[in-house]
Image 1 (tube, rainbow, N blue to C red):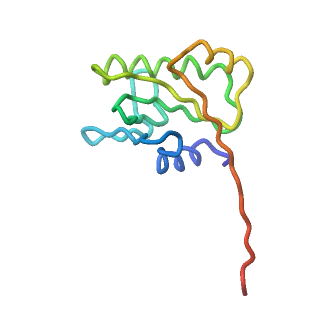
Image 2 (cartoon, rainbow, N blue to C red):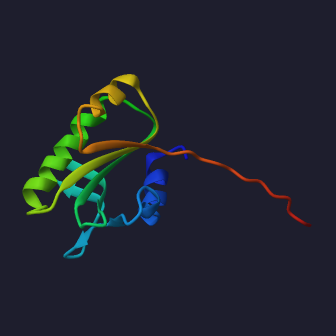
Image 3 (cartoon, rainbow, N blue to C red):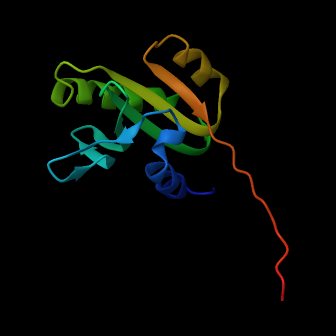
Amino acid sequence: IGLERDLEEYISRNVSQLEEGLRPYSAEGLSGRQYSTDVGRIDLLALDKQDNFVVIELKAGLATDRVVGQVLGYMRYVRENLAKDKGVRGLIVAEDFDERLRYAVGEIPRLRLRKYVVKFEFKDVES
């Protein structure tokens, strides 16, 4: 997966692979994919088993500590405008994470990191 939109396409169709019970958010004809807010577009907005909101930010390749501010802004927006009495947490998905990002996320209990791994399989084709 070389492009963020390829990763987004795959995960939007298979969001429960990130976490059991996770499903895309949708309401009033709005999709959770590229969900527009006043502070930017959330890559994927989902709901967990308890109907709490999960803000998912996707990064193709290495994610740096800059993504923390981005995700926290989205989380605050969702809490103030959508969540009502539901919880809000964040999930950053990337191929890898720089050390400062790992340290920063360690201080934020409602924010987690998930690493993706791409595996290719090759098969002979009969002619």
